[in-house]
Structure formats: structure tokens, C-alpha cells
Length: 87
Image (tube, rainbow, N blue to C red; front, side):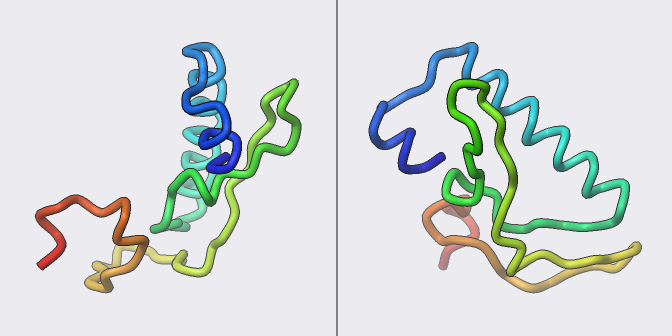
């Protein structure tokens, strides 16, 4: 998605809505299975079919499977982290 977004500069509201809906559905699916992705960003959302806007999440390198455990690990990409978390 990152490359397509960089090329087009922005997505229409309709395209954005479709992509966000699919990402939310994927997150809900993972939540039901106690999986935390921990690195959601445009680079980790693959557009499988641009005409039909079918997307998939990828890069589960930082993901974890947890059941009621607190995580203290800082992970993800600095470019997408809230400024107050960077020292």
C-alpha cells in the first residue's frame, strides 16, 4: 500500500473506507485469536487486487500471541510512533 499511496499521493474516500474496513476485520480476526500485530503501517498492508481493493496484513515479525499478559517491549517503526514515546 505504501508504494501505491506514494504514487497516487492520496486515496479517495471510498478507497480509504474499503481498505480501513478490511484492516479492521483482520485486526478483529487476530484479536479473537489473541494475536497482536504491533507494527501496522502502510508498508505492511498489501494490496492484492487494486481494482477490487483486496488487502492483506503482512510482516508478523513483531507479532505476539498473548493471553492477558502485559508487554513492555518497545517495537514497531520509529517513523509511525507517537512523538511522546521517543526520547
